[in-house]
Length: 248
Image 1 (cartoon, rainbow, N blue to C red):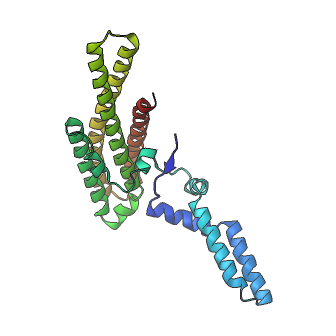
Image 2 (tube, rainbow, N blue to C red; image 1 turned 60 degrees about the vertical axis):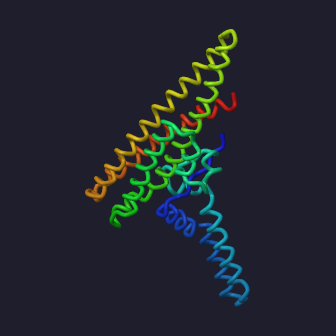
Protein backbone atom coordinates (compact mmCIF):
# COMPACT_ATOMS: atom_id res chain seq x y z
CA UNK A 1 0.00 0.00 0.00
CA UNK A 2 1.26 3.46 -0.91
CA UNK A 3 2.64 5.62 1.88
CA UNK A 4 3.42 9.32 1.90
CA UNK A 5 4.82 11.52 4.59
CA UNK A 6 2.70 13.95 6.52
CA UNK A 7 3.76 17.62 6.43
CA UNK A 8 6.93 18.33 8.41
CA UNK A 9 6.76 20.57 11.45
CA UNK A 10 8.18 24.09 11.27
CA UNK A 11 11.27 22.99 13.17
CA UNK A 12 11.87 20.02 10.88
CA UNK A 13 11.41 22.17 7.77
CA UNK A 14 13.96 24.67 9.05
CA UNK A 15 16.48 21.90 9.78
CA UNK A 16 16.04 20.37 6.33
CA UNK A 17 16.23 23.76 4.57
CA UNK A 18 19.37 24.73 6.48
CA UNK A 19 21.00 21.39 5.64
CA UNK A 20 20.05 21.77 1.97
CA UNK A 21 21.49 25.30 1.88
CA UNK A 22 24.78 24.04 3.37
CA UNK A 23 24.94 20.84 1.33
CA UNK A 24 28.51 20.64 -0.03
CA UNK A 25 27.51 20.11 -3.67
CA UNK A 26 25.13 23.07 -3.52
CA UNK A 27 27.67 25.35 -1.84
CA UNK A 28 30.30 24.24 -4.38
CA UNK A 29 27.99 25.26 -7.25
CA UNK A 30 27.53 28.68 -5.63
CA UNK A 31 31.27 29.17 -5.01
CA UNK A 32 32.22 28.12 -8.54
CA UNK A 33 29.62 30.42 -10.11
CA UNK A 34 30.67 33.40 -7.99
CA UNK A 35 34.34 32.65 -8.68
CA UNK A 36 33.81 32.60 -12.45
CA UNK A 37 31.81 35.82 -12.22
CA UNK A 38 34.60 37.51 -10.25
CA UNK A 39 37.11 36.43 -12.89
CA UNK A 40 35.17 37.20 -16.08
CA UNK A 41 32.78 39.90 -14.78
CA UNK A 42 30.10 38.36 -17.02
CA UNK A 43 27.05 39.86 -15.30
CA UNK A 44 24.65 37.14 -16.48
CA UNK A 45 26.57 34.49 -14.54
CA UNK A 46 25.54 35.90 -11.16
CA UNK A 47 21.73 35.55 -11.52
CA UNK A 48 22.19 32.20 -13.28
CA UNK A 49 24.31 30.95 -10.39
CA UNK A 50 21.81 32.16 -7.80
CA UNK A 51 18.87 30.60 -9.64
CA UNK A 52 20.73 27.29 -9.96
CA UNK A 53 21.69 27.33 -6.27
CA UNK A 54 18.14 28.10 -5.10
CA UNK A 55 16.77 25.36 -7.36
CA UNK A 56 19.22 22.80 -5.95
CA UNK A 57 18.33 23.79 -2.39
CA UNK A 58 14.61 23.55 -3.15
CA UNK A 59 14.90 20.12 -4.76
CA UNK A 60 17.05 18.77 -1.92
CA UNK A 61 14.64 20.08 0.73
CA UNK A 62 11.72 18.34 -1.01
CA UNK A 63 13.56 15.01 -1.34
CA UNK A 64 12.14 12.48 1.21
CA UNK A 65 15.43 10.56 1.29
CA UNK A 66 17.37 13.74 2.08
CA UNK A 67 14.78 14.66 4.72
CA UNK A 68 15.23 11.33 6.50
CA UNK A 69 19.02 11.63 6.29
CA UNK A 70 18.92 15.10 7.89
CA UNK A 71 16.31 14.30 10.51
CA UNK A 72 18.07 11.09 11.48
CA UNK A 73 16.15 9.31 14.23
CA UNK A 74 13.17 11.65 13.98
CA UNK A 75 10.01 9.91 12.92
CA UNK A 76 8.35 11.48 9.88
CA UNK A 77 4.65 10.67 10.32
CA UNK A 78 2.95 8.84 7.47
CA UNK A 79 -0.66 9.01 6.48
CA UNK A 80 -2.72 6.47 4.63
CA UNK A 81 -4.01 7.01 1.07
CA UNK A 82 -7.54 7.53 2.38
CA UNK A 83 -6.27 10.30 4.62
CA UNK A 84 -4.33 11.85 1.70
CA UNK A 85 -7.53 11.97 -0.33
CA UNK A 86 -9.15 13.93 2.51
CA UNK A 87 -6.37 16.40 3.34
CA UNK A 88 -8.71 19.33 2.59
CA UNK A 89 -11.46 17.91 4.82
CA UNK A 90 -11.14 18.09 8.59
CA UNK A 91 -11.42 14.84 10.57
CA UNK A 92 -14.41 16.37 12.41
CA UNK A 93 -16.26 16.83 9.13
CA UNK A 94 -15.38 13.31 7.99
CA UNK A 95 -16.66 12.01 11.33
CA UNK A 96 -20.03 13.60 10.58
CA UNK A 97 -20.25 11.40 7.50
CA UNK A 98 -20.44 8.37 9.79
CA UNK A 99 -23.90 6.90 10.46
CA UNK A 100 -25.49 8.26 13.61
CA UNK A 101 -24.84 5.94 16.51
CA UNK A 102 -22.42 4.92 19.22
CA UNK A 103 -19.35 4.74 16.97
CA UNK A 104 -19.85 8.27 15.70
CA UNK A 105 -20.42 9.56 19.24
CA UNK A 106 -17.19 7.94 20.47
CA UNK A 107 -15.18 9.28 17.54
CA UNK A 108 -16.57 12.80 17.93
CA UNK A 109 -15.76 12.70 21.65
CA UNK A 110 -12.18 11.60 20.87
CA UNK A 111 -11.80 14.35 18.26
CA UNK A 112 -13.03 16.91 20.76
CA UNK A 113 -10.21 15.87 23.11
CA UNK A 114 -7.76 15.87 20.17
CA UNK A 115 -8.62 19.50 19.39
CA UNK A 116 -8.15 20.42 23.06
CA UNK A 117 -4.71 18.77 23.07
CA UNK A 118 -3.68 20.71 19.94
CA UNK A 119 -5.05 23.94 21.43
CA UNK A 120 -3.17 23.29 24.68
CA UNK A 121 0.09 23.09 22.73
CA UNK A 122 -0.63 26.06 20.46
CA UNK A 123 -1.62 28.35 23.35
CA UNK A 124 1.23 27.34 25.65
CA UNK A 125 4.35 29.40 26.28
CA UNK A 126 7.11 29.74 23.67
CA UNK A 127 9.36 27.14 25.31
CA UNK A 128 6.61 24.51 25.49
CA UNK A 129 5.57 25.16 21.88
CA UNK A 130 9.17 24.76 20.75
CA UNK A 131 9.56 21.53 22.69
CA UNK A 132 6.28 20.07 21.35
CA UNK A 133 6.36 21.41 17.79
CA UNK A 134 6.83 17.86 16.43
CA UNK A 135 3.79 16.61 18.34
CA UNK A 136 1.16 18.51 16.37
CA UNK A 137 1.64 16.69 13.01
CA UNK A 138 1.58 13.42 14.95
CA UNK A 139 -1.75 14.45 16.51
CA UNK A 140 -3.21 15.37 13.11
CA UNK A 141 -2.15 12.01 11.69
CA UNK A 142 -3.74 10.17 14.63
CA UNK A 143 -7.03 12.02 14.15
CA UNK A 144 -7.13 11.14 10.45
CA UNK A 145 -6.36 7.48 11.16
CA UNK A 146 -8.99 7.32 13.89
CA UNK A 147 -11.65 8.44 11.41
CA UNK A 148 -10.31 5.93 8.85
CA UNK A 149 -10.74 3.14 11.40
CA UNK A 150 -14.27 4.30 12.23
CA UNK A 151 -15.31 4.34 8.58
CA UNK A 152 -13.79 0.88 8.11
CA UNK A 153 -15.66 -0.32 11.18
CA UNK A 154 -19.00 0.92 9.81
CA UNK A 155 -18.37 -0.74 6.44
CA UNK A 156 -17.55 -4.01 8.19
CA UNK A 157 -20.73 -3.73 10.28
CA UNK A 158 -22.81 -3.17 7.15
CA UNK A 159 -21.34 -6.24 5.42
CA UNK A 160 -21.79 -8.30 8.61
CA UNK A 161 -25.45 -7.34 8.79
CA UNK A 162 -25.97 -8.36 5.19
CA UNK A 163 -24.23 -11.70 5.78
CA UNK A 164 -26.22 -12.34 8.93
CA UNK A 165 -29.45 -11.55 7.13
CA UNK A 166 -28.55 -13.87 4.24
CA UNK A 167 -27.57 -16.58 6.69
CA UNK A 168 -31.05 -16.44 8.20
CA UNK A 169 -32.70 -17.06 4.84
CA UNK A 170 -30.27 -19.62 3.38
CA UNK A 171 -28.45 -22.75 4.53
CA UNK A 172 -25.41 -21.93 6.66
CA UNK A 173 -22.05 -22.59 5.04
CA UNK A 174 -18.66 -22.84 6.68
CA UNK A 175 -17.21 -20.11 4.45
CA UNK A 176 -20.05 -17.71 5.23
CA UNK A 177 -19.78 -18.33 8.96
CA UNK A 178 -16.01 -17.80 8.85
CA UNK A 179 -16.45 -14.52 6.97
CA UNK A 180 -19.01 -13.38 9.49
CA UNK A 181 -16.73 -14.25 12.43
CA UNK A 182 -13.83 -12.43 10.79
CA UNK A 183 -15.93 -9.31 10.31
CA UNK A 184 -17.16 -9.46 13.89
CA UNK A 185 -13.55 -9.73 15.11
CA UNK A 186 -12.58 -6.67 13.08
CA UNK A 187 -15.55 -4.73 14.42
CA UNK A 188 -14.62 -5.64 18.01
CA UNK A 189 -11.00 -4.63 17.41
CA UNK A 190 -12.10 -1.28 15.96
CA UNK A 191 -14.46 -0.62 18.88
CA UNK A 192 -11.68 -1.36 21.36
CA UNK A 193 -9.16 0.85 19.56
CA UNK A 194 -11.59 3.77 19.26
CA UNK A 195 -12.19 3.60 23.02
CA UNK A 196 -8.46 3.25 23.73
CA UNK A 197 -7.72 6.23 21.48
CA UNK A 198 -10.13 8.39 23.46
CA UNK A 199 -8.42 7.33 26.70
CA UNK A 200 -4.96 7.88 25.20
CA UNK A 201 -5.87 11.40 24.06
CA UNK A 202 -7.06 12.23 27.57
CA UNK A 203 -3.69 11.05 28.90
CA UNK A 204 -1.88 13.10 26.25
CA UNK A 205 -3.71 16.22 27.35
CA UNK A 206 -2.41 15.67 30.87
CA UNK A 207 1.09 15.06 29.51
CA UNK A 208 1.02 18.40 27.67
CA UNK A 209 0.29 20.10 30.99
CA UNK A 210 3.21 18.28 32.61
CA UNK A 211 5.52 19.33 29.76
CA UNK A 212 4.47 22.97 30.17
CA UNK A 213 5.25 22.78 33.89
CA UNK A 214 8.57 20.99 33.38
CA UNK A 215 9.56 22.15 29.87
CA UNK A 216 13.26 21.96 30.73
CA UNK A 217 12.97 18.17 31.03
CA UNK A 218 13.23 16.68 27.48
CA UNK A 219 12.06 13.30 28.77
CA UNK A 220 8.54 14.71 29.15
CA UNK A 221 8.31 15.64 25.46
CA UNK A 222 9.97 12.39 24.38
CA UNK A 223 7.42 10.40 26.39
CA UNK A 224 4.52 12.32 24.79
CA UNK A 225 5.87 11.78 21.26
CA UNK A 226 6.53 8.11 21.97
CA UNK A 227 2.90 7.72 23.05
CA UNK A 228 1.76 9.42 19.85
CA UNK A 229 3.99 7.22 17.71
CA UNK A 230 2.58 4.11 19.39
CA UNK A 231 -0.99 5.36 18.91
CA UNK A 232 -0.37 6.11 15.23
CA UNK A 233 1.22 2.71 14.68
CA UNK A 234 -1.76 0.89 16.20
CA UNK A 235 -4.30 2.95 14.28
CA UNK A 236 -2.43 2.51 11.01
CA UNK A 237 -2.14 -1.26 11.47
CA UNK A 238 -5.86 -1.55 12.28
CA UNK A 239 -6.78 0.72 9.36
CA UNK A 240 -4.91 -1.63 7.03
CA UNK A 241 -6.77 -4.63 8.46
CA UNK A 242 -10.09 -2.85 8.04
CA UNK A 243 -9.28 -1.85 4.47
CA UNK A 244 -8.59 -5.49 3.55
CA UNK A 245 -12.31 -6.19 3.67
CA UNK A 246 -12.78 -4.01 0.60
CA UNK A 247 -10.17 -6.06 -1.27
CA UNK A 248 -11.45 -9.49 -0.16
